[in-house]
Image (cartoon, rainbow, N blue to C red; front, top):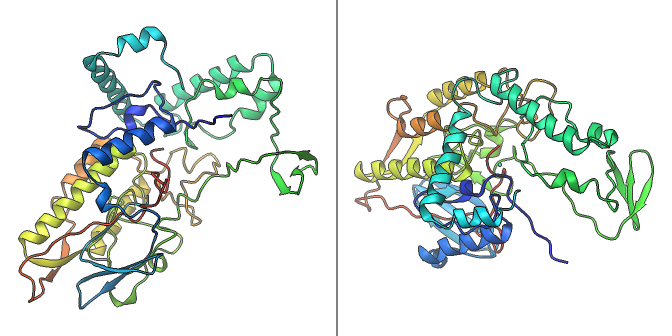
Amino acid sequence: MRLCARVAKPSHRYHRRGYGRNRTRCEVATSQEILAYLNEVVDDYQLEPYIRFGTDVVSVHWDDALQGYRLRTSAGDEHEFEIVVSAVGCERLFTPEERKKYESRLARRLRRWRLWLGVLRLYVGKEFHHIGSAKNVKREASARAFIDDVFADRPDLRTAVTPTYPYAGKRQMFNDTFYASLLHDNVELVAKPVERVTAHGIVDADGIERPVDVIVMATGYKASSYLSTLQVVGPGGRDLHTSWGDSPTAFLGVVVPGFPNFYMIYGPNANGAGSYLFVAEREAEYVVRNIRWMMRSHLSAIDVRSAPVERYNRWLQSRMRGTSWIDGGTRNYYTAPSGIVVTNYPEGPISWALFTRARRLLSVPYKRYPALAASSSTSAQFVDVAARTGNSGNEGGGEQ
């Protein structure tokens, strides 16, 4: 038996801008196709010599004398880096006629543009995640109509799968085969919590045990627990997780006050500002601009100031009001134990891109650390702290 996973969104969202290969056979790509694409990118850009497979980064400690970080790996090695960028991170088959239509490179490009424009339209006016907005009402009605159509003869299943929370309160999954699979004679949907697992099967909350041969854990992940496997210590022994407490925050999901030269890709409140790659590319550009500025100014380190970052995060949380992420009694992975949304960005890709380009206009100054006497310029080295065999994902799971 061969198992195949698929991504949750149209495959163009998982393709890097300017790297136009798209050999997926489906609008929603399979895991094998995504892996093949990633391998092509690694080969074409000759990245493999810079990747350490089978190695975890376990800690990153600031060293004042070094004006940089000492990085320790699971293998017990220690490395020195002036700059650390942490990137650990939160279907429909084409018919033969459609495949023939999209054999043309121009046709594929035009389709991608139409899909991108469709994403941008979601953020014009009141966004679809705002309860009661025209887009929210329309998409919820469409989703409910689809469920009603699939389970027209099975009201029990219709009730079991119909959400009781507002539309977009949890991650939306677009697939036209999953619900239909619940109608198969050899499929039983048990809409009860799992109480425990025994040597022979699974016991639900009603105490009923069902014998099973194989268990597939689909219990989710802790998207709001950023850098959960990595200890980051800044100047003065300041621990990043202690500073965050139960409410991780950052500026644009990239920088945190008190941790100079430390950057994140897809950190707090970066999810939903477009596709994952769109966000990662804008954040990477932001990091590179900072590094170039640092090198031109002959600085050994820079650190974002806390006051403007606090103002930014207050504004960010104010924009969460009225969204399905926090209203309507929704339980999701977007919120921290404190109750605030720490994964999502509420305003869409256009404002996000502008923010990443307007650091100085937004009055987000940096503390400057003069270059060390022994060095006339600052160099930058990058380490991917998620470089492990077979792991091409990100902590947090891509866009909302």
